[in-house]
Image (cartoon, rainbow, N blue to C red; front, side, top):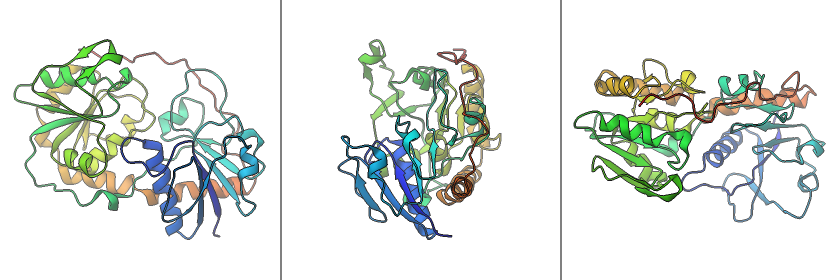
Length: 331
């Protein structure tokens, strides 16, 4: 059965650089269309799409009144106070973490098992990407550095830990994709070590080129990562992942494709043995498990549940334990 689906988000599409959620909803819609479904986006002004219709959100009008009559299912990708007013079948993907105890909607779905479990839910769908857009990686090339990929201004991403880890290993370099050398927001952070190169907020082919010349991703996050597109993008280009055992990382990073520890010394030791990891295995792990078709098929199962009048959770998901501001990390 083909479904008329409306995807709603509060950021423009397509995304050019960072924008993880925008990237996910783009590839979800594209894959749903390939599978024979009709997709429409309700997104902010300035959005464009070549495979689906786009309706501009009117900030002065209720969302319920902006949903076309032909729509059969509404898929939210942000938390809106108007979700409760939607009369058509709907679900809500939760992409981030919540630090307070306000319940989520009963039709909420999360982006990893750990993410769902922290709110008392078992409804989750892994994010997936359309790897055709990323091209074919060179898995035999010479690689000269490691990389950090993420918003370096967020303390939970622990760029400082990534830098200290690489600095503790002789003859290794780190390229920071997602930050600047001088960061006043981080309490006047200055990084002068020539082994650390800052490339700013790169995206598209430029980002892919950086990753495709990297030995591995250094990702010592200090929060419960909901998913982590940086992880699967890096794996796709043959980069093993060296991170902390928090949030989704224990699900996404198996021992064959990376190493997890909350200690600089342990991570540095694993990084120094990077050659033991098979680039082809890393690549196939991402390509086969975290692609947009797998994601779309998983969402279709949930769409069919709510279309039959079922809820995705037996009760509204809610934060079970107040999270620590920063999870443990040993420098």
